[in-house]
Amino acid sequence: DAGVIQSPRHEVTEMGQEVTLRCKPISGHNSLFWYRQTMMRGLELLIYFNNNVPIDDSGMPEDRFSAKMPNASFSTLKIQPSEPRDSAVYFCASTQNAGGIYNEQFFGPGTRLTVL
Amino acid sequence: TQLLEQSPQFLSIQEGENLTVYCNSSSVFSSLQWYRQEPGEGPVLLVTVVTGGEVKKLKRLTFQFGDARKDSSLHITAAQPGDTGLYLCAGRRNYGQNFVFGPGTRLSVLP
Image 1 (cartoon, chains in turn green, orange):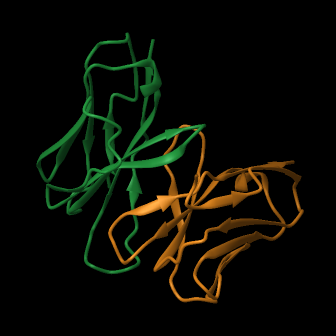
Image 2 (cartoon, rainbow over the protein chains, first blue to last red; image 1 turned 90 degrees about the vertical axis):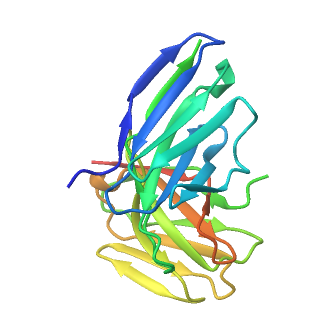
């Protein structure tokens, strides 16, 4: 079975450019999460969706970041304009939110973003 | 300030040794999860603990949730090089859907 799919795996861009990260959750999962991981700050939740609806975006750093989930099988995280401090590994995770407390988040392999 | 603290930050041991890593907070969690992350990959769930004082075992790994549900420990018996990785704890508050992650303990088991 395919897990969470993220693309690209690596992205190198220059400051000021627009960056779009993509995620395909596991089929049948109805919750999707975007995380950012750095050495300094660890793994931080940016935003999560339930049934394609954004529920909590309090972790989004600033207006330069936006996320969409147009359907159950696709989500994007966009940074415009990008800055060097955005350099990090960005993870997407999905889960089948059945209301239980044992919900397991399945993580994708991540996108390593470098902003020069 | 981290909501969840993990210690030690780094740990390097020889194969066959035992070790314990800790996850601490001043907040109460409805549940707590432990993940292991290997280089170049996303975290993978090891266990979820829910009840204060709960102990779960996964082969050579033993997980305990504190009585007050504010802390947790992971004990590995007879560590193997395959245990090498970043161990993350994640706490769930107020039965919400999202978890907050600790900074992790980076474990290296040398053959």
